[in-house]
Image (cartoon, rainbow, N blue to C red):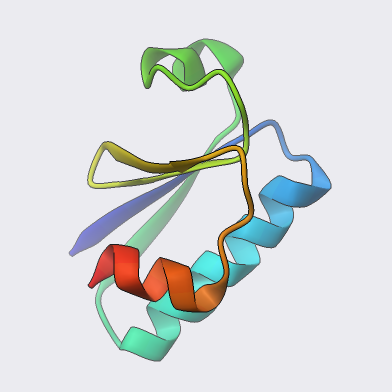
Length: 77
C-alpha cells in the first residue's frame, strides 16, 4: 500500500492537490491511503516551507504547486 500525504493548511490549492491525487491514485487502481497533514509543525518536520506539498511514503515529491493528475501518476508509479 502506498501512503500519500498532502501537506497544507486546507487552502484552495491544497484541496485541488488532494482532488488530483485521489483521481491519479484511483486511475492507477493501486491500494493507497491519503493523509492530510494540516498541522504547521508537522509540515515543517518534512522540511516544507511552502504548501501545498505532496509526500509519498514519507518522502516529499513536490512543493508549492498543484500537480496535475498526469504528474502525480508519474510520481506514484
